[in-house]
Image (tube, helix red, strand yellow):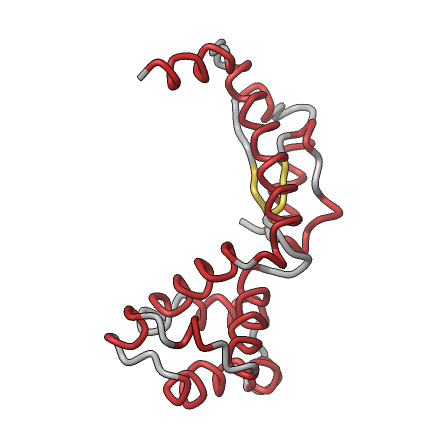
Length: 172
C-alpha cells in the first residue's frame, strides 16, 4: 500500500482508523502528509529512506570517511570502498536509466536495490553511522518527538498511562 492510500485511509471518516489504534510512519519525502493528530508521522529526511541512504553512502564513499570504511564488520565481510563502487554505486547510478528502459517505477527499483540481500547488511551499517552522525541530530530529535507524541496517543487509546510506564521502568 502506498503512502497516498495510507493517508487517505487514516483521514477517511467512515473507516475512522484512529479508532483502531493505529500509527503510520511514512518516508521523509511524504512530509507534507504528516499529521500527528491522524497519527501519521514521517521518517527523518526529506527523501525516501532508500534515497536518503543512497546519498549518504555515496557521501561516505566520495569523502572516504575512514572511521566508516574501517569498521570491523564491513572489513570482515568484504564491504570495501572498491566493492561499494563496483556493486552498489553502479546500481545507484543506473537507477534513472533502468527506470526509463524498463518502464518501472523508480521507487520500486530503489527498494529492490536497498533490500538486496547482498547489500542490506551494508546499508544497516550506513543507517547506524547516519544515526550517530552529529549532523543528523536535529532531524532525529524531531522524529523522536513526533514518535513519542503518537505513542502517547496510542497508549491513551488503549488506556495505558504513559507516566505510569515511565515510573515502572525506573523502578526496575
